[in-house]
Image (tube, rainbow, N blue to C red; front, side):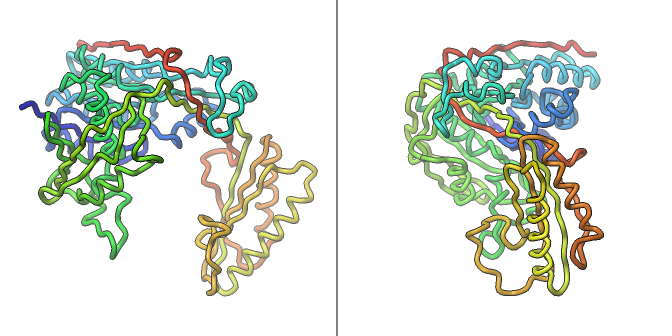
Length: 455
């Protein structure tokens, strides 16, 4: 009976680098999938390129992630699939070929799958935003990006053509995993039960260590052994069995509980989980612990035919923002922080040009749940005042710095050092993401191939 093993190399662009090499060396795997996208990274990428167009249009960490493993992957026959192509998968494929040539890797075939970028035509497709039902065309001057979540067909096609590495633009997060299964087991893209099975398995792996103990630990309630050394998951698939595990000798845990939490991660309606290639019914999924750190996944006819549309995220220029942190410690820290908040509110109000929003939170007190935060009875020893300002223009936002910096000499007593989380300029652009549903027929994909003779 045919058996394949697929591993998760990363869950997003800034994930850890160590698991990928270890999985190739010890995992007996056939495929290694790197997720390099998220809604957050997509927005960050657009902002970064607004500030510096010289930044590559693909995952800036692509080289750092691929170079250390490329030679070993080729030698062991491990095929790599990643959505790290971001805005320009063809350029990412060229970079991978350059890496291969530098390493002397021979006989390498790299495929790029493009088509998700519809920035140039989204304004004229007659679409409405899902969140507001307002026409996309109303914001045509503020649109800076529009990317569709493509399906797995381009990846499957590239695998059939013998590609060793496939780099895509935006695709559904589970698609690289499902594509490997569809290729190996010969599933038709219209076989919605098997495609749903593949998408569910891919969904369980797409967030990497989240199914091996990441984002699971809650000391004393849900303990995770050796959490500093988490491994990413491996799924072993045959035609009638699916088992998730991790590398021996690594930290973390694979259990029914970790699998259930990941199954429901970012899922609105488990009975109708919309994917690019299918609608999956996650209520048809069960888990069974078969050994330590081994969980069998049982999926019963969980597919419904795909919807007539793709989802796309449209990046909207929403102005500019800056943030600062002001620190207080010792007796009366909360009183001094509150006085500083009132002081800044009064000074901001004096400016002729007003920001669209000012937000001031006390980190560790009410910065997460805000108005829903329980009343603080004890006087905290340390308080951090976060000050954030948003406006339509950079010039208005810059007023934040002109009012916060003088606190060093004309603020309250015992004020601490402050700084900004933003690299470089303290004022940065804001790109908001809004959803649209795009008819499939207006979003064709394209697969290109590059080969490296090496040597």
